[in-house]
Image (cartoon, rainbow, N blue to C red; front, side, top):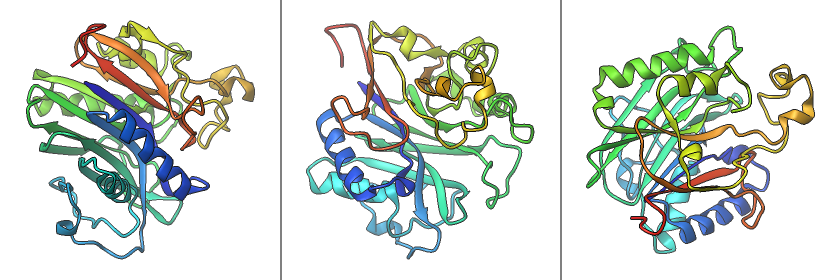
Length: 294
């Protein structure tokens, strides 16, 4: 089984149309079983679409905003379907980003989506506030012992919405919902380099979650950001006060609640060989023992 995560940057990304097509081509080749995406946007003033017109779309209970024309997840799903690969998908927005986008999260699954889940992890519930955060999860048919969540965390040093408070809320909600009785995957942009000891990455690992990169029998550098991006320009103190050290960060992870064999972990859409489609690279893992991936 293949799992993938990527912070898409979506409509904000320069040369968006070209990158959408390029990303679709990568997915057509790789065909991840589950794809987790963050910063999945739509114009907040776009024309609302009927759910019934969106093939494969599953609305998450408790989310009542419409999918609008130009929604990144909807366009990607349609493009893939036109090219012969149909995904089941869900999307929510958590906040208004850059004063014009409904910014949210999406999950794509090759298997039908059996159940969805979403909940708030930030202290703020204000949709107009750009620091408001949610997570989105699915359970897929035939994989009833697994839950997959897409996650976009805040920063460790944020006084209003610190990483640790969000992380504790996330774990508490998963426990309340009985999710931890299953195997849970948390996939996404954790805004925490693995080299910043004693902060976000450390908190996740000390909570008992396992980093698939560390479990992988085969792996590359794991670097998912190689330039100073939004949110990190003022946080170089976490990285020895040098903007150069904000390059070559591993910020995107697939964490599992219990041990599973991971055959490989690799960065994707990094320019080598696939084109860069976002300000983050993606991460693809293959679950299973070497030579017996299923």
